Image 1 (cartoon, rainbow, N blue to C red):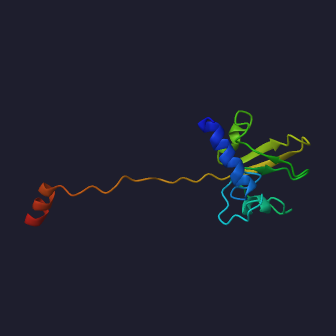
Image 2 (cartoon, rainbow, N blue to C red):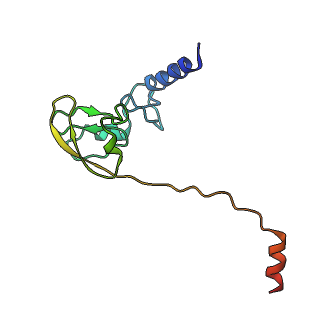
Length: 123
């Protein structure tokens, strides 16, 4: 079995045992042993406005769209702001708001240079 095939089998096993969401494949912290939805996908069942890290819900037919699956047609959705989207199932036009956040990684702290320590002590 190739490494990719083994990875796909393991991923499907995680979905089948509830370790990953059956809809968006997000990790589920406390799996229930059967296919289930993550909290974000459960929220998508609500009629209220919702945020989801991987899916967009059509307000008319409730179809879910994955902008990651078709990045060329939906590339603008990855930019911060409000974007017009056409549902792939019912062709309803609606607005989607994208919020982008950043995380900055800093390198490890360097050991002080002994010459600099000596200079600081003489001041």
